[in-house]
Amino acid sequence: MAKSKKLFTIGYEQTPAKAVLDELEHAGVKLLVDVRAVVSSRRPGFSKNQLAAGLDERGISYLHLKGLGTPKNGREAARSGKYDVLHRIYSAHLKTSEAKEDLDQLASLVQKSGPVCILCFERDHSHCHRRWIAEIIRDREGVKVENLMAPQV
Image 1 (cartoon, rainbow, N blue to C red):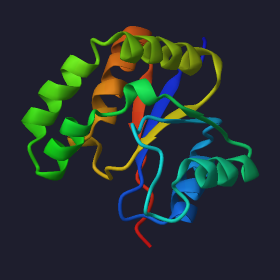
Image 2 (cartoon, rainbow, N blue to C red; image 1 turned 30 degrees about the vertical axis):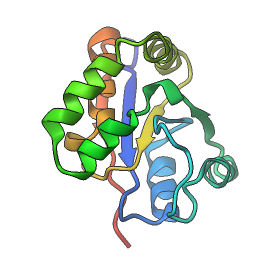
Image 3 (tube, one colour; image 1 turned 90 degrees about the vertical axis):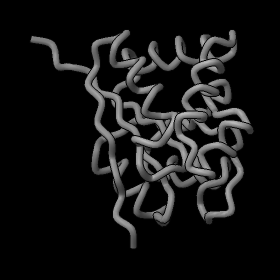
Image 4 (tube, rainbow, N blue to C red; image 1 turned 180 degrees about the horizontal axis):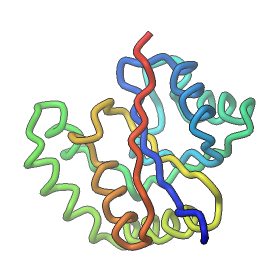
């Protein structure tokens, strides 16, 4: 019987880079897909180049799929705790051609690339756009979703 594919998700809010990298390595992730619209961060180790370098040291590949990032007005809604507004904005965004292409690419990677994890900022996946991405991939590809949470150190 074939082993079921899995898609991991993780957020780095209030978590040091080392803890996130440790969690990814422990889970056996081979590819981290960054689904942030903006790949710079005030948190050390989470800007695109720093993150990619840290992952590379652990044998984990990095890919940024900007089309799956949350538009600015959606990020503003999330910061204000207006998750219903975020969901409405992000649902509309997922209908764009860029988002559809990136969803297709992610689905293909999940099937072909070994353990894949999607990353964004929010620690709690239930208030984050990565939850909706994971649900779409789960439903389309029949994969299991596991939400990782690195310890706050």
